[in-house]
Image 1 (tube, rainbow over the protein chains, first blue to last red):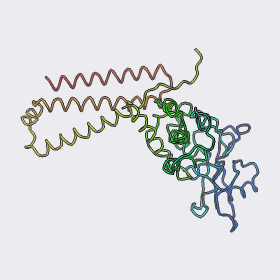
Image 2 (cartoon, rainbow over the protein chains, first blue to last red):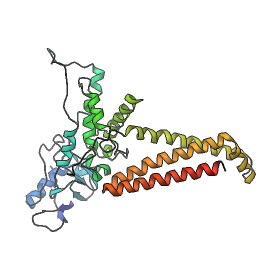
Image 3 (cartoon, chains in turn blue, cyan):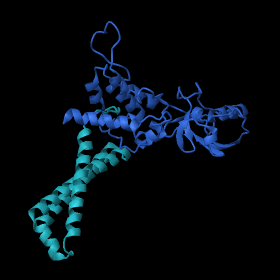
Image 4 (cartoon, rainbow over the protein chains, first blue to last red):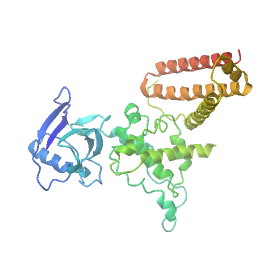
Length: 231
Length: 114
């Protein structure tokens, strides 16, 4: 299997370069991450993040043949013989396939991704009906890998002002939660031409999400709620 | 003034909704105009003049022109917000776009009611 991998060490390299690798796969190599770990054994200067190796932690998000995805759940069998790997687009590169996610997480934190309540805590848990709980499906599963936000041109142009699909999916996760008591403040926080309305529904986010979530749908629901509360 | 990044303009949904409403108006006008032209007699100067001599056609056309202008302003402003980073330049371009659109609208009124 052949690889072309983005290499860049800001301390040593004047500019990024693409490095070619050849790798003989073992029968036990199932996922792209298995191959990357084998490449790392060949060339220990090759840098990438990985942790859980099963699509739960979101560490090994990268641009695989032009599309963002997680190396650990991308099957080698589904890839062509030559694989081009680049870091997630739009974010500053720390080294090789490792990007600086500060802006991404700043936007995530800006939507207050936690339950806000004003009442005294109940004796037991805060209850939801099955239908109310159902609304959170497709939202809470997000692992914050940043595949969606870094596939979004609006996030490329305005990462400091536009929340981005991942942050907006999380925003809707708490707007949709019947136990949350800060819905109006959350909507006020997003009623902004930059924070929310940079989304022009091109749906790169939904196309990229390795967990098959639909940030574009969540963003549409936030817009609908803003209109619904005003007209 | 320190240059900090500030957001929170508290507008957005009105423009978002306006873009959709104006799109529906433009689509409806296009269908009506196409129907009038396709179902009517062969188009010559007389047919065209008679069509636009009617009050409803003038009002509908003005409504269409206003929709185009409003829709286009929101879209062009979005493009300027995405790509033009210096605030002074962005404001200048936005003023230019508003004046241009207003000029076209005035011209449309003049043509329709000449």
